[in-house]
Length: 426
Image (cartoon, rainbow, N blue to C red; front, side, top):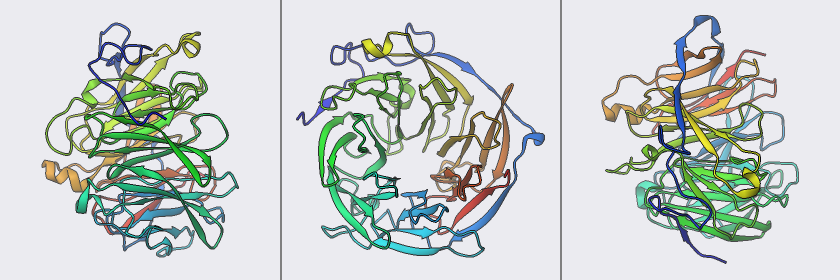
């Protein structure tokens, strides 16, 4: 097994497969750029009912949603107090008014200590039909960001949970993604960290046996990862900080070739906020190639953009890097700590839920903390402001299974409250 592989963003060649190129405007074989029109259209507005569901959140940086109870309603899965470590649990989804019931999955990891992270995922890890939960052992980013993290997954057994060890990463986890990277029918896992600027990939052999197949380090990696097929070869790739890591067609220990979509997302200097992004990947046009949406999660002055790949017929068989087009959706959005792309109004087109982290934006001397829904239309996007007091790691899901997309709003990274916005389309 290869224990490490570094990529150099200024190298002329990466692993002999193709040159690592930043997709800058006007550069040969790199992304062309365009802009879309964004307007405010009152006729395009959607209605959402808002429910206050949690009042005792503490630094809920790691939270997600999924129906872990199997009752048809999405539950809110969380790690408490990610600043200094806490318990792993969920709040049981309900359609009635009132605070949701808290259920603890584990007060502590099997090896002691506490849970903490910057992201959380649920997935059917063992393919038994219910959702399992990842657990991250760490003392908390504000306590000791550089401390190593142990990764577990918790098997959903109905009323109880069984923990299994996956592996270790060097420091605090910023992003987690489950995916079947080698098409063997088993979910694997990718983890991004900031302090050591690392990307780790663990392959699942069995629910008790996981092998680290990649450990990639570069000092520009920070935050903002998702997965998708970006070159139409039928294998899931990874995007992190606008670097696309191309899957070596299931041979996961082989080198993952790398392409830089735009160096503005990974050439920053300064404090901890450098190179912080939010990233979302999804196929919006049905061509079986995922588009990539990116914004800056911590700083002001950066746009919200979309990248679309142009795939040649032989690209998947020759490992040729796609050509990417960068489209500017919003020219600037400060501390954009939510990015979700779904069809919110049921017209068959993608829409974008985004918004500003109030707790970060005030420190940047900003006074706009809008939660914004961008609805696709013939001229670009129609803008609808859903709230004016911020959102952090917002998560969109069809909460009650009625066919429309709802979302959870956590106002800022220090809030004790969390809200459910129920789409009234259906």
